[in-house]
Length: 113
Ligand SMILES: [Zn+2]
Image 1 (spheres, rainbow, N blue to C red):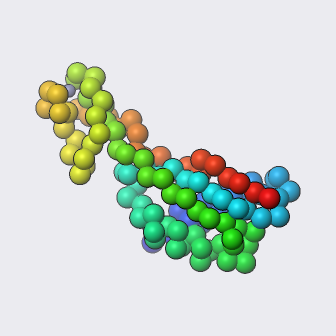
Image 2 (cartoon, rainbow, N blue to C red; image 1 turned 45 degrees about the vertical axis):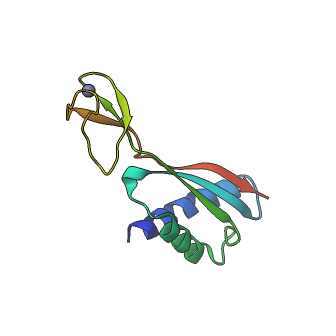
């Protein structure tokens, strides 16, 4: 399960950060998840809650922000939002598109107490 592995990774990052800061509990975790990762925010929240039970992150609220998939045309330089994984430049029709955003998966903010 995709989300379970990701949730475990997030939990590891959060617990390590809490330990380094001498924090007793993790209150809030804000995540940025690119649309390209195809992560289901609800499934991720569910997996995280299951894994975090009994740890310092047991009561942490997990906020998942899905960032849109943005591509840039290598031929004309146009940047555009990629809808439904249609990697074609809307300006010139080129398929030479590089992804500039939408693949990220990172902890953006972590609140401890
Ligand atoms: Zn183009």
